[in-house]
Length: 441
Image (cartoon, rainbow, N blue to C red; front, side, top):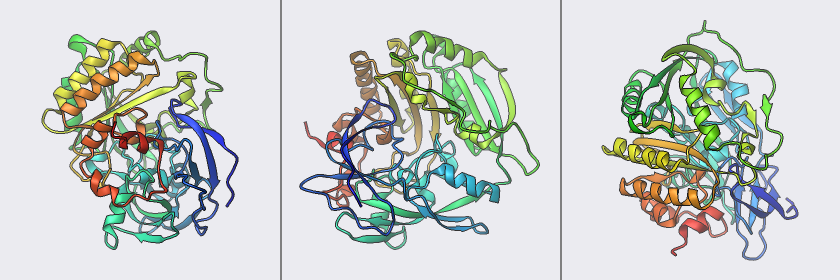
């Protein structure tokens, strides 16, 4: 294994970047690299984390993209084993034609299995299926001291729980095995319903969880007054074997060739786009959609993150638990609308009661709201402080995979099993995110 020359690595939001030494991990049978001096190292998949949880500025990254081999696929039982650098897109190409689908899919297919485990990603069916880690049966963990551990919930429940959602801080996952779910084909029956305000949107979202496997809502976060929280709820179930619809275009789709000098996402374009999206269809529509269109609507635009310009963007994803969640979400949306710092991609989902397996896993029962904001410096920072106060007061938390600026006190308050998790970290594993949120200043 060779250490490459220092290079600048950026995360997906383009607000966090810095110089790293990068080691290429080319085989799951290799040993952990010998890191010189007091340097730290962090496993690195496809860099789709939005903030700095996938970065280790001033240290080293252990690149896993060459760990891209399938190990086992039982097409009768729906069990898949693969190396940690395999992307979900690769899995989908293999298993969907055989009548299977990963039990949980996040908003992009271009994440690695190792990254999905490290962040314990969730999807539009959390109320039914829980998180990605709920369906991982076993993985191998390679520690910086050379120890290899075969981890499962039955044999090593402590290491299993620490590594799922553990942000790569326990070591490197070299391979993993997971359960799949049976599907009749690639199609979903999708119903889209326009809601006039937040009350209607939340009621419909919660009601839909009873009969629909997938639910998600887009929110017009610039709407105010009686229209506060208006949006569109989408709910879906897998279609039968005879279903058919419009397939995604062949190839990789449209690409944003470069970052414009300024963000094309601004108050003027946001108001136009949000109003157009809200009114562009009838109040209630029913369609048959290919799974790629439903699960990964942005994957058809390569490098869409460049639309935010050279300063990049922040995503703010919070989880609000408990009976007061609806009122807290109302306060969050009210603060965002009043500040005029709207988001084009404002997504609301209702999480269910199924417990995530990881000590630091983000999801729990409640409402999650995710919003993308162009990086506008001090004005945005002031808004985030107001949002943080609402989240903290509600007993909520922010999602490390999407974060580039969370205060350490909010992280420590939001993850009550942190002290338990610390027993399983390795001193040679670290990240820019970890050093930031663990600083006691």
